[in-house]
Length: 315
Image 1 (cartoon, rainbow, N blue to C red):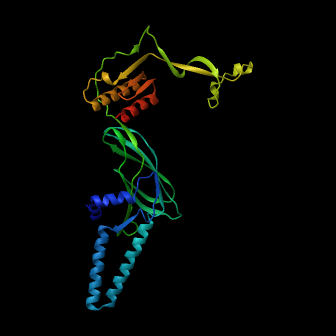
Image 2: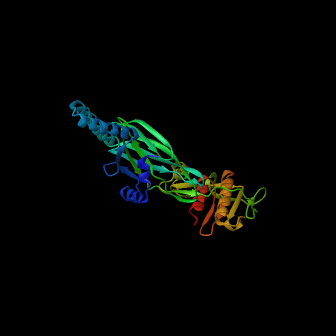
Image 3: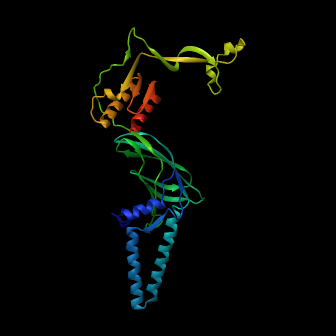
């Protein structure tokens, strides 16, 4: 473990860093956010400098002292260049996708320079390691972050560092992104009595707004697709009308929290998540009732995602 890692893990230091590096959606790195310290090789180089200085002073040898001052100047210049590799970088989070418990949420970030200089040997650690050899224009990166449990998830800190150009000095920063995602329950297979499903041959079917079959004409609303406009009625002087279509679903279902066979709350939600995914995969329209809210009848990918979001938000 690095000495700096041990130091950073102290609770007082953690509190100080959170005050100095608040959560944000984007940040431009400056002196306030960047830390600089010796690497392991830099520490050995510092020991060499100390030995060289003591030898020069002890023996009164100007040549040895000259070597000491030369090496010291190289180290000082290295500090400046290492700091410059992070100064002026702009990092922002573009998108984050919801996940499920014990899964991974994908975060998309953009890193871009705000100056004309070229940035080299940038390393990013965010549960995964990525390295940028040369950065002279904006670049988009993806990270998959573990989401251990259901509910609202705030990602851990991202570390950005560089040891360019000599490897003696390490410049680094931490970024706490204020980009929360919702984590739905991990699906758990469960049997249930399908009491509210209807459909099949000869049984009633209910229509949902869609694109399958013509239903009726309504007055055109600005913003609707022009492909829905009934041009024949417009040509007859009957005004601008919009065609409405309907999807017919052969089956419908109703998911009820109280019908789940489990006893504890979290397992019930996990069982509901299992059935949401099953019904979504089979394109069966369903409604859902939870202790605190309800989801009306619907189907499709968007409806399935809404159901999973409600399961994630359930207290």
